[in-house]
Image 1 (cartoon, one colour):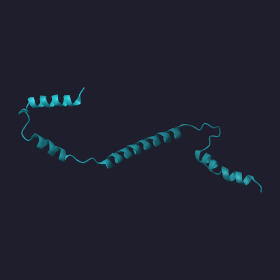
Image 2: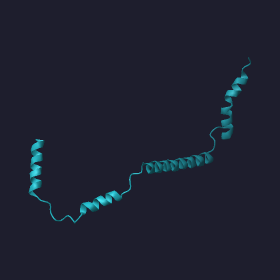
Image 3: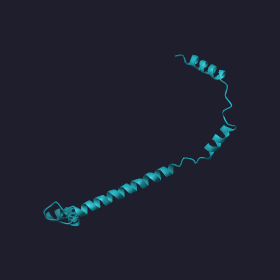
Image 4: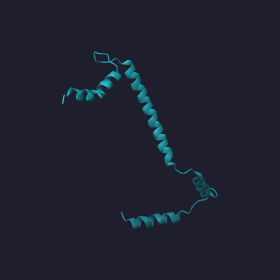
Length: 102
């Protein structure tokens, strides 16, 4: 389709139909005043809202895992405490150095 021909036809149709009186008086001024009264887009608000949602979901996951670790018994046969297991893991490297006799 020829773009120039289409544009010419559309302009001819627009000229044949003059605008009506159905548009209220100073309508465009009221629309522009409403647009000017709108607040500007605040990008910081988007970040703050997203970070608070992330914080809320992290707290929910923390509570869920805390309850789960409190009520689920230990699976190993010793029934040891998590703090003891953590301490053994941290000091494993120190214990290995004491095994060597140089």
